[in-house]
Amino acid sequence: MFSAPKRSAFAQLLQFLRGFSCKIGLFLFVKDKHLGIPIGYHYSKEEFELQKLKSALDLIAEVNHVYIELAKRHLLGGVMAHRYDYAPAWWVRETSTCFLGSKHVEESDAIELSLSIIHELSHARLEHRGFVYAENRLRSEEICVRRELSFARRLMSAGRCTSDEIDRIQRTLETLGRYYSTEAVRGRERKHMLEVLRRLKQSAPRCVRRVLVPLTRRRFRAERAKLRRSRM
Image (tube, rainbow, N blue to C red; front, side, top):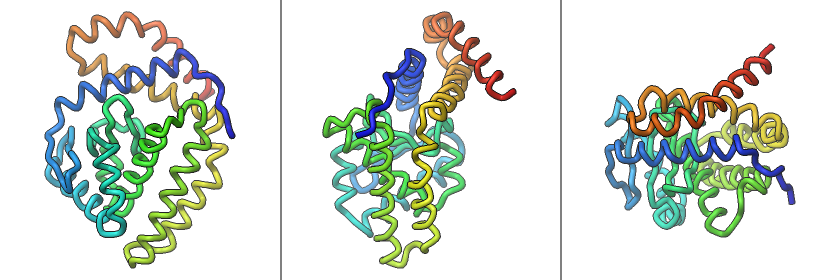
């Protein structure tokens, strides 16, 4: 089984900041429930994006209702459209929530969003079974992408998607080794770190900034310098 190197203090700080910002953000989400699953949004075009989340969940229920029951069990925080694009989609263990980035929600149809939800739900189920992502990153992603592929095949059998979507997911499987190499992951972590810190400095309450900014300013500058050197 693949075992990733021990996570750096930088990666742990990134995880903390992202989890913290998501916890704070949940208080600002306008929430509803659809098929028993909490849903919400945290940016403009609210009703339109909320309807897209409902359509994605409806599609999942139509093709395989078992996933809806699993989502009720494992996605206690629901499916939320987040205003920031840390990634197209991500799972936050601390809040048991599947987040979808604003750009991903705006540009994707119900099929693409449903596949993202299935992927993040798979992460939630793995963690519930004691699968430690940081120690088994590549294996975890492979399992989740394969579950995406399985669901996409069901969609195609139901006449809801074409073979192009199947081909895209298969290409993703073939490139997982490069995408989740230590160097590639740390490069993305640096970018995410800078983005999280920038957002916190811009929009976090003053009391939060007073605590976090002094603690992270030196790390922020060091990682920004690393990112600039990597672009040269």
